[in-house]
Amino acid sequence: MSYLILFYQFAKFGLLCFGGGYMLIPLFIAEFVGEGKLLTPERFGNLVSVSQVTPGPVGINAATFIGFIQNHFWGALVATCGLVFPTLILAGFAVSLIKRYQETALLKGILYGARLAAVALIFYAVTVFLELSVFPAGLPWKFISTGFENFRFSISGTVIMALSCLCIAKFKISTTKVIIGSAILGAVMYPFIG
Image 1 (cartoon, rainbow, N blue to C red):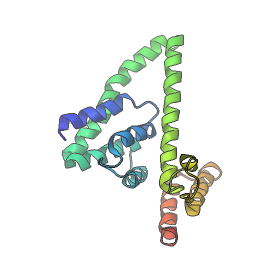
Image 2: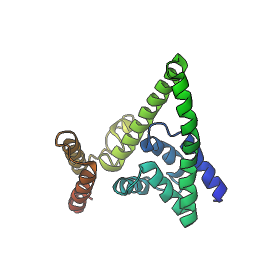
Image 3: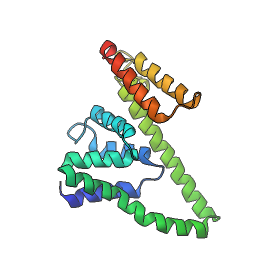
Image 4: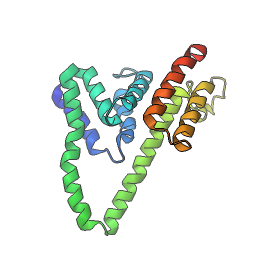
């Protein structure tokens, strides 16, 4: 893939990045994940998991990794710059417009709609992670028409997810420590369930 096309792909994602890096996950999935594409769902899940442990936003880490797979070092640099470039340009422009028109119904409506779309895309990302960890045979509602004969439920995945939520919400443990702890638990439990 040429550097120009790689830059264009990620610049397109950068233009659509309302709501943070998790909003980019469905876009990355549509473009790069699946049969005959660059990444398998499992490899993409691993990529996002590693992106959480490494410093930096998940969107930039994922863009860097995908660019590296495409064209090594220069691909990583081009993909990362492509993702960030539109934001740098549009952020200054948006701030001046928001300050000027922040009380208008049109701007309030645009921001409201963008937030709702971001929530929907983040929810979609959550379902992808549920399929990769808790429901490895697919989410239950995906095979209602065919019955539940292929249904598998990962108890260990559910336990790790529940403990992670409890540690963050109830005990206010840092997310970094929770991710590292979850990775250790997964490594310990996987030989028994994998």
